[in-house]
Length: 200
Image (cartoon, rainbow, N blue to C red; front, side, top):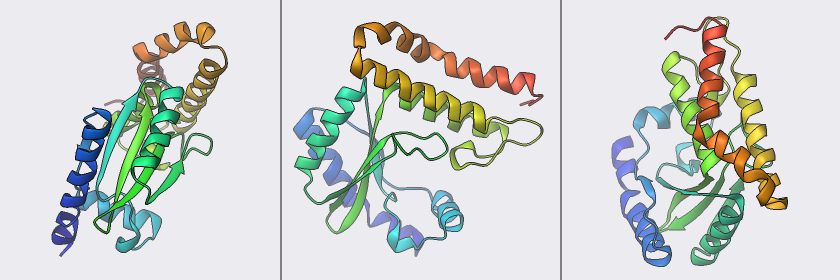
């Protein structure tokens, strides 16, 4: 029954992805169906109902900067009038920052994640760290003596400050942003794991 319910979101996902491609010339990265394991884990973690989940189907668009993120979110809101915004930039969840535009298509919610390059790099590295155990994305620390939640949340705050500085004075912040984009967060997390005795 769960698989059938999940599959019922596919037409809505395809309609949203096609409209984005036709309107903006962007091919979003797609996750037309959330895995059953992810669905059950979220239901258990958040105590929500299956009928209230907004991200069973979703896609993602990554843009270079906050300016382009704001502009794309505004445009998506116009293209999909029946929508709801969840802005995790100023009120992040365990450091996660992005804007989610949740649209309704064919009676089904489809989540469009809009991230900047730096927000996307942060999220990828946090997901990568899950291979060590734990679930930093949802506030579950890695096993052993590692204390990486504070590390990744601090990195997220640095990203937010960098991106705000780019809005205010882009000519002064580009070089710093490029350093972070080049992989400083990867090195930061790896170094923290090594120094705190986390073995893969």
